[in-house]
Structure formats: C-alpha cells, structure tokens
Image 1 (cartoon, rainbow, N blue to C red):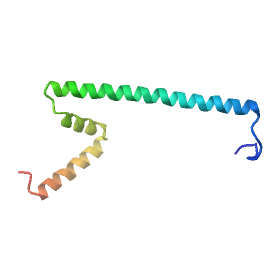
Image 2 (cartoon, rainbow, N blue to C red):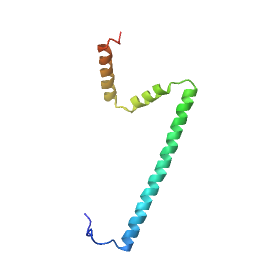
Image 3 (tube, rainbow, N blue to C red):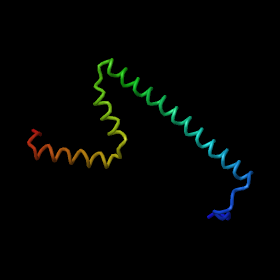
Image 4 (cartoon, one colour):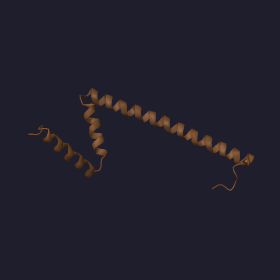
Length: 92
C-alpha cells in the first residue's frame, strides 16, 4: 500500500520518476517485441529452408511440439492416441 493518499498529487520529482520509469518499460517492451519479430522471421526462414530441401514442415512442427513435452506427458498422450486408434480399428 502506498503512503500517499489517492487524493494527493505526486510531487514533481515523483511524477518525473514515474514518467521516466514508464517510458523505460515501454521502450524495453518495444525492443523485445522487435527482437521477437526478428526471431519469428528467422524461424520462418529455417522452415522455408527445410521445406526447400524436402522436409515436411508439418512433421517438423509436430516434432518440436513433442520435444517440448515432459516425457511422462508424452508417454501418456501416445498411449491415449494408440488406444483411440485401436478402438477405431486403425492399428494392425
């Protein structure tokens, strides 16, 4: 909780500090957003390169998704998918 009641204006120094702090946050976020866009473009380029050499990008995306999962989560998911495939008669 703030020691300053809500109806009291901030001092000029405090207001100046808050303004500079806010500006700093905004500028940092803008820089990070630009970096994120650059990285996203780089990833897009890598997928295009992989596709150009004959790799299936949908399969690559699936592999990336799987690699992010915890091993136990992955095993559980695979078991459920196998069970469903068997129930549908799709597994020999």
